[in-house]
Image: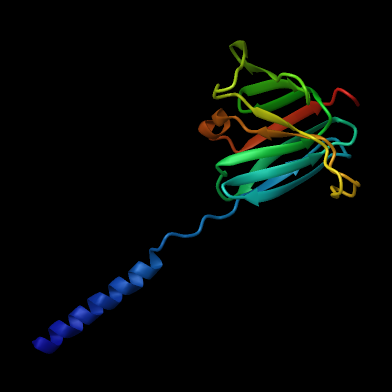
Length: 179
């Protein structure tokens, strides 16, 4: 009887060890996105950075668009876009039924409006739909997409509502002041 008890305990211990190894949490799958543009000169690249992703969009003509869709993995906590244009006469972010329109330049204030089916509203920092848009100056000495220097750009952070809404795709359209 004593041998059977020991054998049962060993079997139970072995089963527990095997199951605990199988039930360990899996590593999250890094997000993968597909980015397309109807404009042939727009170059889009991305870098996964914890806790998010950063898209680099180079637009030599200053007019362009992109559609970006999550194709694998989980949506990251943050999505930022570094758009290489001098100024933004018009930036339009769309997802689901939401359209946010912004203007920004390197030295002046940023203005954003929200368009929903019910109408239009002005936005301010802190609103759930607010896109943070930071102007970044040109940098010398580096190379970017074969260019001799990093041109001026804007760092755009997706609004909180995008993540709350559960969307996995969005589109951007932009026009530079000096095209």
